[in-house]
Length: 355
Image 1: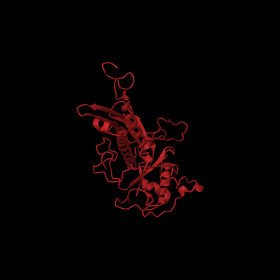
Image 2: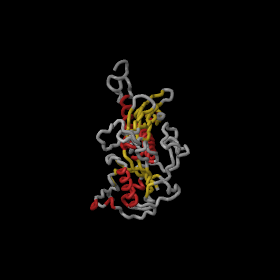
Image 3: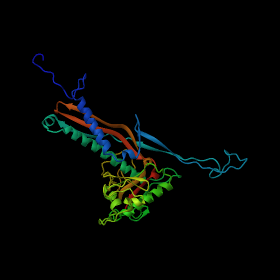
Image 4: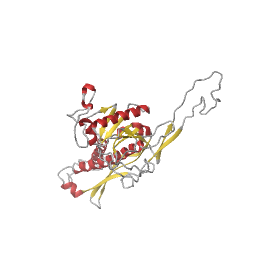
């Protein structure tokens, strides 16, 4: 001790450095990242590409080639016809995904509140900031998958997205009524998943990477078989004698028809096509004029069956955090942010479940 002064041990100080908050910020940032990862359902279920600069990313789309038996003596390169007898006219196009405006989640922690508090308020704030970004990310990706299911074909040799009417037990949107009450049973939902699997098979969509995301009410119908009046009739997905993997004890159904199953509260359920939704300001119009940004009319929607190739995300700035102690405000401003964009890649890989 010199001149009556002590040198305090600063728990946030990294040895050899001068920032007394350095360790605190790392913990805060790590908690935000952990919450963001844990709260995301759709992140591992689609294609993600990172760019270092620019406002968009291009994804080339190519068609398929044809084959023909060759007649001896004929010139393969010059033999004409419509289509050409030998030469394949392989179609080409591109899909472009734009980077949206930076999305931020922020909060301010007054110094007096921090020192008075009897629990770690920074952890609570970190959790909420991470959760806010995760919900917005997940919701935007979910709506992009639904946009893919309603999108037209990329090329003449590929297929468009599809909608399956579960109550009507048929593909198509013609009989959907936004005001109707869902009356389909769990057994009909199981049938819808097998119909979706057949559709994906017929469109040569790979078996690996298929998934289905449902809202909780519909997910649990797969076990109980319940209809809108909560009349239970247990479905075959829990019958292990015929290969069912569902469990009443855990309330879990891992897979049906080779499709991995998930439940999420991030699937939209209201009409946002008028531009009142939070994603109306996106730089990507995934509904082609039938909505705004990532927002459309989701009143009939309750699930999506898809392959991971249907939708892509382009990241310019991955999840990052910043903090600054503001002496004039006597507190710390915390900001979590990212800059990304979402878009449709292969609509033939997406099927909307509706009723």
